[in-house]
Image (cartoon, rainbow, N blue to C red; front, side, top):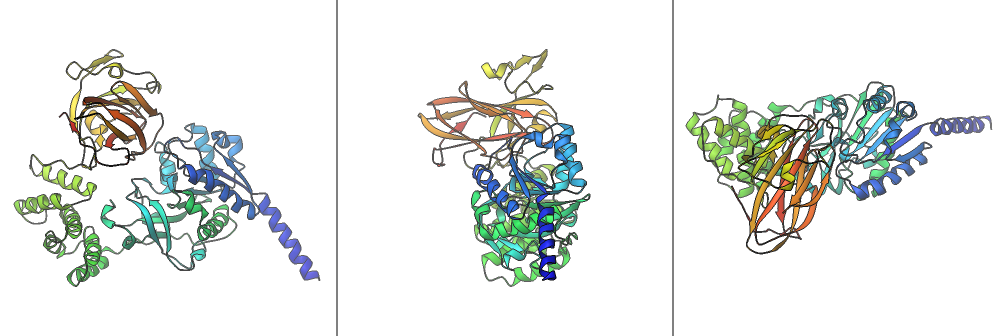
Length: 528
């Protein structure tokens, strides 16, 4: 009887301790909004937290991070926050101090697509969003099945329909990676990482606090999955400090062993999938036979040839001039440029060929992207007023005369996009912070055409078509092509497209794709 009473007392004591812990589920978006993931996922996580005995609050109010309020949170969850949810230094410091002081932080999906202007946040997360190569049903590999946070998956891969991110500034050796993408479930050639390390979930200590990041979570379907909910339940308990789990950083991949295995696999491959997988490894793992084996596959099927091109480019880049004679290298790279279906690789091949003095290389952009633009700037925007208040191009563009604004003259210059269809404005106009730039193109169609304009920008933008303002966004974000879509009508003949791209700091770029109302191809030309 005494034992039962003691157990009851312990249980009540544990419940009381849990009830004293406060969880903030924060879903404010200043860039792209993952609507149902936030609107449905946050209440699901609130229910999980309350089921564990925690006090849970759903909010999109930045005041939650005021210095006097941030101290109350034992766990902060960012559910698909984008842009810069709050810019005040005192709020950012209060949040970071609370985490380092012992609170937990859980970030889902687009938590890596925010605070590009806050380096310490990116350091804590161990990376920033750098594209989403796959949006489909995928299979996630459990790297550590016995880890407490992974036990809900029962040692089996996790399969679900989702959008999968890749990251910049990510380093495996700084965190404990728990889940990664099974590349056999996707077209691996669409990814941009040479090391093919597409981690999906990782944890780390951060000061006295705990960091958890999960790439899954683009849509509500992920949060509604019962297995995923069980995983979140355990992750929440770890992040808030109620259970212990190993955070020893993962080992970096053994490149020599991987390369030797890949060479043998390629020599004995019986399917295109095996060849593609081996070539992908050889693209970043050095081996004396790698280049010859890759070049031999450039005449294979298109998918294998693309993988071989990516491998050859990676190998030559890594050799840094110690490879074949220049003429042979140029020949291999030209063939690789024609075979590669990976934009980032084509960009790298083009750069190397230009460095070798090769000219007149063909421009290859994805279908529908405007490749030829006139650009002008950078126009200073120190007070952030030029989202609403504009410069002369917004009332009319004269490419020959340029324009004057705030006592300074600006000229238009012609530029081409990269192979992704993206114009790098830092390269075209010069690096700048708190500025704006203009991109202008004349698009010609033979007859009146209903279209959808798909825009991407880093950071904010305003878009005009034939003088009419279609929309805009004032905020910081990465360039996600197609993140903003506008229905429009192109008149027969020339159409004037103007984009104002707002720059806060860091990367600065813009792009525009023209497709039909259902995403179909549209025939148009652009003045060069």
